[in-house]
Amino acid sequence: MTRYSRQDVLRILHLSPRQILSWERAGLVPSRDHYTFEDLGQLRALRDLQTRVVQSEPKSRARITARSIRASIDAMQRVAGMRNPLLESSAVRRGSRLAFRVDGALVDPLTQQLAFDFDAPVGSRLEIVRAGESCLQTSAQRSAELQELFLRAVQLEENAATLHEAIAIYETILAAQPTHAPALINLGTIHYNMRNFDRAESLYRRATLADSEYALAFFDLGNVLDEMQMLNEATLAYQKAVRLVPQYADAHYNLALAYERQGQKRRALQHWLTYVRLDPVGPWANHARDQARKILKAEKLSIVSRRGRLVRAG
Image (cartoon, rainbow, N blue to C red):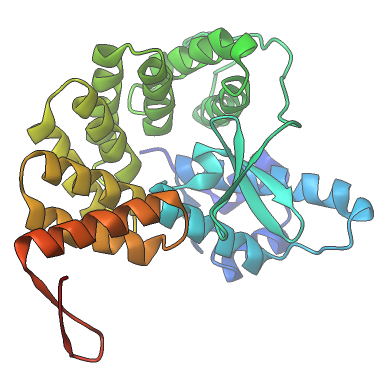
């Protein structure tokens, strides 16, 4: 695994020691003397985010702090199962918090509210760098270039007119680094939305092998296996996702659905109740409550309240 010294990072990203130290104190990056490729991408994303915040500061009195950024990232990890939201999506400032671009919408993970993203950058055509070309000369340059390509692809895939460019960039990244899990996931999702389920399954499986702790990869794999009528395998994938991220609400919801379809009502109940606890407001929460009530009534089950009192269904 390629590692970069602290001085390498300062030189490559044009950062000051004080800036890295402030991010370390806020828990946004690990405190260490040598950094991985993923650390480099995280630092680059934070640098670019800080640049956008400084540029927009005169237009807004709301101050965004490192602690606020940390809270938004933690919330996005919980609700979306993302391992690293700054690398797997595009962060956008919304007042004193961060929102994240996901499938053409802005997601505020702290409120779990969606808003249409009319300001999403379309992006001009990008000169795609092929693996092995001279501009990827050193390991550090190669890593930085791949990260830059990935961030551009994330932006391009948000617009149907530039989707083909995003696909080409993801393919280029994977040609250079076949185990780039976020690129595998994003390209898989494009194919999933195009109903190319075989291709999507292959990409998602590669992502789970590239990073066995990537909850989003297992969740997406479960979704495509469900579409392919492979319910048993889909269930296993959802189970893995919730083991990795126990507060992954959407994975609990889909796992409950999978159990119900297999006639395993009691197992489904556990995940309906977990979903309601994690995401108590909205139509999906209402549906989860209704399903839990039906199971409790039909099965004549009992649940114990927090105060230890027995509450019977019906």
